Length: 259
Image (cartoon, rainbow, N blue to C red):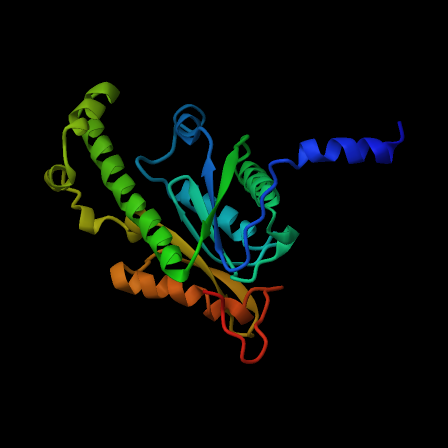
């Protein structure tokens, strides 16, 4: 059988589950590290606990790389072992075919982080298809809230460990504590939650800016705003970066960003 005939017969099996994000939907990709808990525990035992600036900076560098690997990413957000990427409303790479975004972004993140760390690291990827700007804002509020919860939980756990509790004892002690009790635990341990670095409590944002020579560059923000200010911050990323990201689509005169 000729090769073209084989391709015609077998291609449908390969592409049967292909989906494209419909026009008008905003796209946000989230990448998560696979087995980062085991990685940090077994292969990086000298890390500071519960947060290490070296890991933070590796995540920032990986997010910066993803913003420049062929897609129109207008904002990136990272906390813990995850990275979220907000695409330009008119992102059209690969015809918005989801399997391309999943595979390329996961591969780029895994390769970049592994090269930086000198250890084999793997990321997975999923894409949220959001119908309007309000859902985009909700998404990033959700991830920032998760960062705050994670920060509180991790500091409480390591405060208990520093007090002599074992892994199991610290985990069991936290299991029955609500947020207020956890805040009190930290306060009594001499580490009030409000005094922790903002990048631990809120995560880190990366956005396109201009340098003194009017060249585009990516700037990390380690002091993200909160609540309504953060909502406005995210909304602005869908408009302000249109003329900043290299290769980014610029709307025609009179054209409005998609909602």
